[in-house]
Length: 248
Image (cartoon, rainbow, N blue to C red; front, side, top):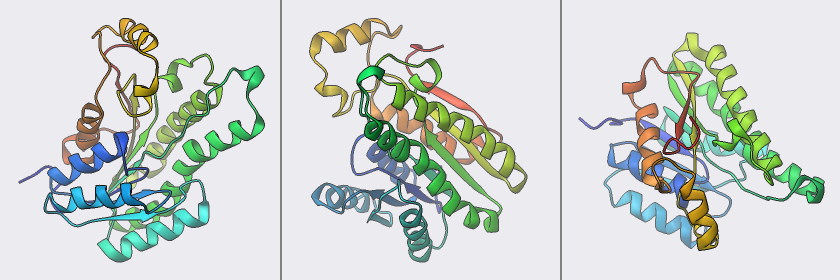
């Protein structure tokens, strides 16, 4: 039996990048996968096709995770279509990096809304179903910079630090109902976004990592599989770093 057989997962921001790899890893382990992104475009449709080709039920939904009302809507639609939600992965996120002296209020608000408020939105919408089921696993994507901070990323670091506090609070609040809440803190992961960093800057980053390389999205996805499965049945309120010992 596969690790996630008969489970239903909802993954936000999953048309590409880490979110997509989590969705694929879940499908390979037998989960039915609902996923969201801001728009239903060719990228979402291609991801949907890839998931369906793995032999599981899968569907992409256009949804703005930063909107409370839209999050409630999409969760209700997923439950209507799939019957339940066993795993929620709050992965949606953006960056608008700049030094604090140059950071605008607009850029601060946008990052907090998409990265942090979205976690509240989706968790709030999903918990009512998990409470009825008396089971569930909530997985929030934080970051090593949410633990250690980083120059030029005050908004991003604050949003990811907030996710850690939220994760631990939810774990204590919902634990008695057999609902687990954990966070994953990736380090330097090779994605389309990090691939745009100049080669010399990327090598400088990698030189600071004890394992001397950036991580792959699939390596983050493996941890998400663990946290979504019954292998982690007594793991809650934790932050698991996936960073090659960059932050330990």
